[in-house]
Structure formats: C-alpha cells, structure tokens
Image (cartoon, rainbow, N blue to C red):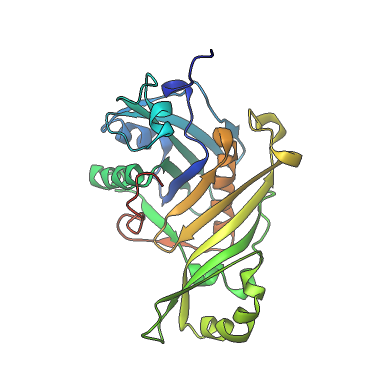
Length: 285
C-alpha cells in the first residue's frame, strides 16, 4: 500500500485561497517570508509549482504551525506525519510583479482564518510600513468601457457574477447576478443598467472566469485540458481576491496575470486596514 502523501510533500489543492495585493518598495517576497517566520517556520516544499517570466516570479513556501486550520481529510494531508496531529504545513504563494509605475506583491493562503490572522500579523509587524494594500475600483472595472476586460499576456477574463449594493431602496440591501454574461441579461439591460450608471446601485463584488494557455515548460503535474489553465476569481472591494486552486495548484500561475489585467485598466486602489476584513469566518473555506 503506497505511503500517504502528507506534510512537506503535500499541497493544499482543490480549494479556495485568499490572496491580497500590496504595493510599494517594502513589498518583496524575502521580507514576507521573514515576517511570517515570526509566527511559524517557513520551509521550501518538496512539491513546487515554479513559474518565471520577465514580469514576475512565483514562489511557493510551507508555513509550519501548531494550529489546525483545516478540517476532515485536509487535516490528515497537511499534518506533518499524516496522522492529523500537529504540526501542520500550510502552502503559501507569492509573486512580485514589477510594474513600471510601482511594483506589487501578490500573496495568498488557504483557509479563511489562517489568511485573516496572518495578514493581521503582517500589519502589526511593520511589514506594511513601506507598502499599501490594494483593492479594486469595482465600478470602474465593471464599467462598459472596460467590458470585456483587455487581454493581458494571453489571459482572458469574463465577468460571470456581480453583486450590487442598493442605495435607493430601504427594503433591499443587495442584488446578485450570475451566468455566462450577466451584463447582457434582460433584467440588467431593462432595469439595473440605469441604476448602475447613475451610481444608485454600486457593485462591490464580482466573479471573473479566467483562462490562459499553460506555459509549455511549466505545466508540471497539471496537464490541463487543451493546454488551458482556468479558474474563478472572486473579488470584493476591500481587497480579498478569492481564487480556486485546481489539483496540484498549477493554475495558481493565473493569479499574477489576473492582477496585471486589473492593473492594465488602472483599477487598483489603496485600501485601509486588513483587506480580508469581510472574509467569512469559516476555517474550512
């Protein structure tokens, strides 16, 4: 019977990761890993998902902690010895993107509580002294002039979900639309469009379906159908980029491209406090 893959040899895949974006000279992977080493132990995993380009390099690390943030089978997989007992090794990803105007650091974690508490630590540790968290100017991103989003480095993204905050009706707080093209739905064209354009109904969340051809030298274990990498990216205005990892986490390489795509239409903006402040407190998410 084959030995169970666990701990340093495992990867927390087939789940959502919570990414944040920091902008500024102080936002570099080496400093990030050093600050996170204050709450646990940062190690290089045996299973890696490498990607290098002229614009960014993706880094993959493991964070060893005593607390179990996972549930069920994931607890066994991430346990160092595979027995569900501490310590546990959690996968972290970070990518530095050197935009001409200002570089960005994109980094993310599995499990809502782990992500929230880790970002709180980074804020308290002084990591953000020379950097600022970035959110998305949602009304601008979803404006008619930016739909569909501009193709960037081979990444195509389409809006498949949007949530509007209602400001002109006390009996209604929010409206959600989903589907292959919610901005061409009859209810949007006949009613919501005018509310959106007048600023009465303001989008504060959206879902992007992202797709890009895999780099042939970096497909790793993924072997995507027709050579395509895909994922859904859930964005809220506070700066939480919730990204679904497929098996092996090979599609994580889409994440930096998605941020570059949002940057290309000038829709990143400074946000105050922890960008994950609206995160659902569900350790299994």
